[in-house]
Image (cartoon, rainbow, N blue to C red; front, side):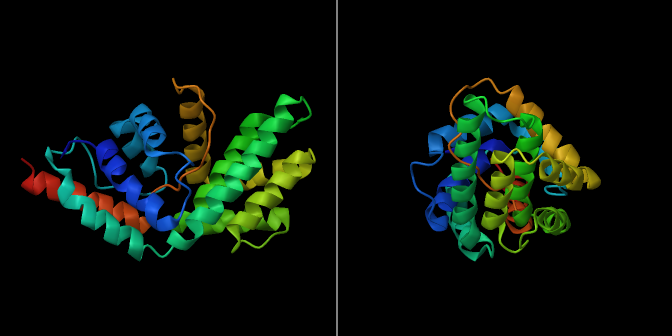
Length: 230
C-alpha cells in the first residue's frame, strides 16, 4: 500500500491502536474510522492538530512511500504509549454516556443546549491524552467536584449533571473550556466539522486524538517519507 497523506498514515496505524488498547472490535470499526478520517481530510487533520500544539512542523502532502514499512513503528509506538491503558475505559465511558444523553434528548427531556454538551464531552474525553489538557481537566474536575486523575469517572459525573439538567454545572464546565483559548477553539472546530459532516450514522465511539508521543511518531513517519519517499 502506497501512502501519500496523513489520513492514510492514520488509517494504517488505527488497527494497532484498537488491538493494543483492548477496545472492542465492534466499536468504530476500521471502515467507519476510515470514513471519518477521509471526511476530515489531510489538511483539516493538520489544521485541527495545531490548536493543541500537535504536528506543528508537518505541512503539505506526504510523498508516496510504502506504508507496510511503518506497521512495526505504529505497533511499537502504541505498545510504548504511557496512556494506552486508559484508552478503553475512556471510550467505554463516553459511549455509554453519549447513548444516555442522546436517548434523553430524543425523548424531549433535555433542556441543556446540545452544543454545550458536545463541547464538554469532547474536551473531557480528549484532554487526558494531550499534555496541555491537564489544566483544563483539573478546572473541569473542580467544577464537577470530581477527581481529575479519573477521566472515565469525570465523564460519568458530567453525564449525570447533563441528565439531571443541571444547568449550573453545564455552564461551569463550558466556562472552564472558554477560559483556555486553545481548547475553546479546538472544540468549536470539531463541532463545526461534525455539524457539516456528510455521513449520517450513529456515533458508536470516541477515539483519542494524537497524544504528544503518537504525534511525534506520526511526524517522524512523514519526515521519513519526505526524505526517502518514492
